Amino acid sequence: MFRNDDQPMFNIGVIAELLKVHPETLRIWEKHGLVEPSRRNKQRLYSNNDVKRLQFIHMLINDKGLNIAGVLQIISMYPCWTTKHCSGNNNKGDGANTSKPCWKEQGTYCFVLEDLADQCSVCPHFKNGCQANSEQ
Image 1 (cartoon, rainbow, N blue to C red):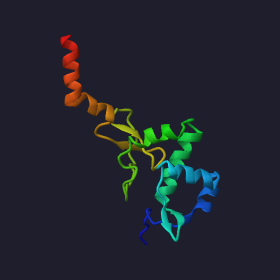
Image 2 (spheres, rainbow, N blue to C red):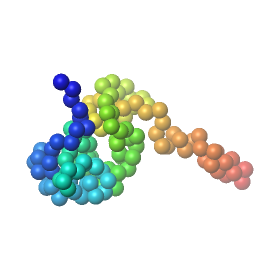
Image 3 (cartoon, one colour):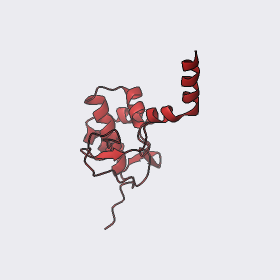
Image 4 (cartoon, rainbow, N blue to C red):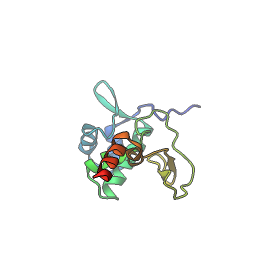
C-alpha cells in the first residue's frame, strides 16, 4: 500500500498531545508561518510531514533555546521546508560545509549546493562593494 506523507489526517488535539504542547502553541506557530496545516471544514489537519516539521520546530525551541524569530531564520535555510514529497536524505554527514542536519529525519543530512552566505561572495553587488572599498 502506498503511503502519502503529505496526506492531512491528524487534528490539532492529537498533534498537541503527541508533542506535549498546548493546541494554542500550534496555532501560534501556524500564525508565524512555521507550518501550514490543511483545512477541512475549518478544522486543521496535519500530515506526517507536518508532524516532522513540528517536531523539528519543537526541538529548536525546547532543546536549542531558539525563539520563533530564530526558528524562522533556521527554516529559511532549508529550501525543501515546504516542498511536497521531500524524501529527506539518508546520507551520513561528513562534516563538510556541503551538508547540514536534515529537518525531516533525525540523524540524516541535507546536501546543499550553496547557503545564503556563499551566494553573497559571488554577488556582483558584493564584488563591486569590495572593489570600491579596496580602492579607497
